[in-house]
Length: 316
Image 1 (tube, rainbow, N blue to C red):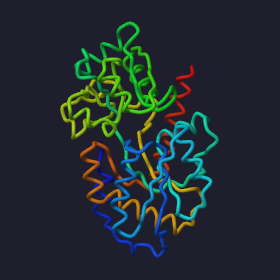
Image 2 (tube, rainbow, N blue to C red):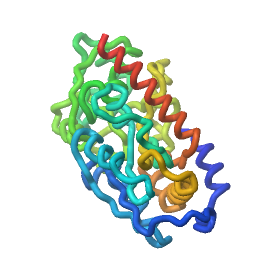
Image 3 (tube, helix red, strand yellow):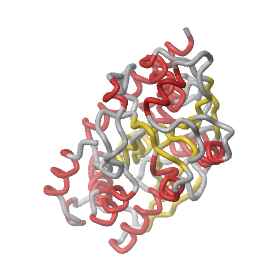
Image 4 (cartoon, rainbow, N blue to C red):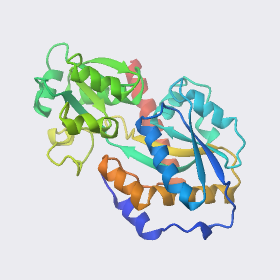
């Protein structure tokens, strides 16, 4: 994964609370749409540990249900005063693109991108599928393998698997799960052939050898897994429908005063680019680039269009 933006940001910024004259709330409630202990929750907890010694108390509140609907609906009903923020993701973008929830992207003000996760294909340790060649052969066998990911049909996991099968000219049966932990358990138990996951969700099982990574659905190999090939190395497109990234980003309700928005962006971006946060990102194989402003808006818009294109294809 490219880290040019990250390195530029690290060279240009340091923790400096005096960078903006806009006073920040001493306490900020951060709404997390997923359960405690999951990858998104851990991102929030890492921000919490970094910000509190620097004068901002981050109160993490897990509001699960409806994909991202419960937490994000609460967020848009909050006052745009900087006291309530949320962690949005590709899951929210997919729900809005499919018109499954009564929310719109313009009801949120994106602040800072916290993480971009790669997608990888994994198998259980006892699987007869040993490598990417074996995966492609299974896809091209009549009926194809069962492939699991977090989320039902039409969510990003399903759409990424659909794009892989299209590129490989293969078939598969999709199995949606409420989270990556269930995907991992089914693979380990031999009840599922393949799983599409974020390394950050299942690194414990990867490190223990219970899961084996056989392919990376990105343009470049991961430094943490230098021996695992990308599907581009098999002449397959990583993003056949457009770049639908697995990303998590901090948002506020639309309508923040500009100076407050800038101050919150500075605060969160410096936390994401701090040495402790970067160390965890490197350890768990995700990119923490601190993208903000128009560049973040563009990334969200590109993901929205790619997801909508893929969802339309899935309905054909």
